[in-house]
Image 1: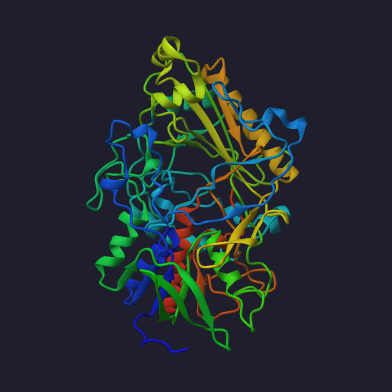
Image 2 (image 1 turned 90 degrees about the vertical axis):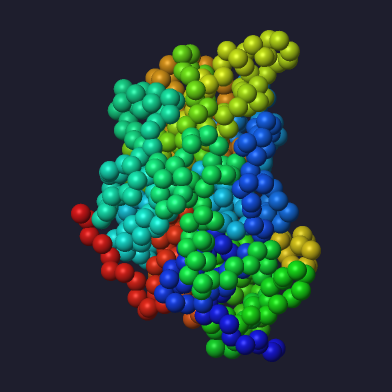
Amino acid sequence: MGIIKKRFDAVVVGSGAGGSAAAWRLSSQGLRVLVLEAGPKFDPNRDYKLDQPDWERHMFPDLPGSRGLFTIDTLDPLDPKEQELRSWGRASGIRVRGPRREPNGPAYWHVQGIGGSTLHFAGESHRMHPKAMQLQSKYGAGHDWPVTYADLEPYYTTCEQLVGVAGPANQGARWRSKPYPLPPHPLSTPAQRLVAAGKELGMNWQANSRAALSKPYDGRPACNYCANCTRGCPLGDKGSADVTYIPKGLSSGQVTLKSKCPVVRIFPESNGRIKAINYLENGQLQLVETPILIMAAGVVQTPRLLLTNKHLSHPDGLANSSGQVGRNLMETLFWSSTGFLPGLNNSHMGLPTDAICWDFNAPDSIPDTVGGCRFISAAQEIGFTGPIAYAARAIGGFGHKLKQAVRDSFGSAISVSAIGEFIPNDGTFVDLDPQETDGFGIPLPRLHSHLEPGEIKRLRFMARKSRRLLQEAGVEHLVEEYGAWDFFSTTHTFGTCRMGEDPTTSVIDANCRSHDHPNLYITDASIFPSSGGGESPSLTIQALATRAADVIAGGKPLRPSVPS
């Protein structure tokens, strides 16, 4: 195999939260970086339709090549004893009528494109709860992180400053060395009602920490509170990677960014080093040397690339001497309850997920189960931002009666959503589909999902607490509920290339470097040893990636912080 002349110090596969942060940090220290993105470049002015009269009919755009292909294995049977966890809507009735869990929508919500899934995310920016990083040693479940909260704290701060995160002064156990760069956002009308209801129930609600600008920052405008972050932000106030890390990296002159360039082959040497990769550009196979290779293709595509690249010296795939590549998948354990609240106005306006309750987030905070959860105000995030959602999901019917009901109820939806801990289990993982392939003949990744009794117990807690909170707020009748018991629909996904100290039970070390390949690093959510009690992963991905880049460029990370 002939290798082209070395042009880059590092090659990054994927331009989402982890790939873009690593590329920026490496370029800021003088390294030449090639970023290869399998998906397209999105144009906010062209692709995001929020300025169009029919905006509500357009979800996040599905451009050619912007979704990685995958399959899903047969899902769990549904236990008839758990009917209180069934998804339903006033207009649609029971959502899952069969005997098994079913995929909902794309099932695995991800984006291939410059900026990755940060283009689609709501913009929550969370630090992990320190206790969630010691799940096994303190609580006997899951796995421990080989790094501590203190190790990540200076990188959390660095990333928050670059992105422009707006948040409250204090978040309990998540101590800080510096305040957020921007003040918290004002609360929407439904969030205000939930805060008041929570106070009556002894729940502590506060403004959520958000990668959305509460004031103009670094040349970007403040949020206009259109409430549709997940449809794509046309203004640039949401801190997605395409308007934060990527422009910073490109401005250094050290980063070369290529879209629509999927990686198809990875070539290891006999000593374990990754020598080069093949990628496609305009249909032509390209070869590039990899002094450093950073995989950041996501929780599904990263293990797929490692597993499909088998060699004589690596018959089970790359970085897989432990047999853990693809294992330990952690999906989104979610619940949502919605009702109409008489007298509530303009709940379709504001910042999605603007209020949050962390009271049950620690691993020991829910009775009789290990693993926490968080609650948020969610009317805007789950799509109650326009009349079509009201008519199709919460009212139903036809003609004049339907129109009048929409007029009467519009702006009064109030929702509570919860996301909980997912403990790894042997039935939830990613492997290669034995039959389905892509256009290049490469096996597709196949997702397997299983809910253990602990996950069902947390779901039940999340559902009952959500209903109780809405009742306290004044909701008399719910109009929609859905959750992970009967739907497989994962937005926060983790764990298929777990980090750890023991090479026999993990894929990478504390510095995100492969135990098997000295120049291979992984910097996406696949490296998480635990999911946390509902924390959004993007900020932790960025912190880990930035820390790994410092190791690559300088040999050691920043010194850990101490509580202020």
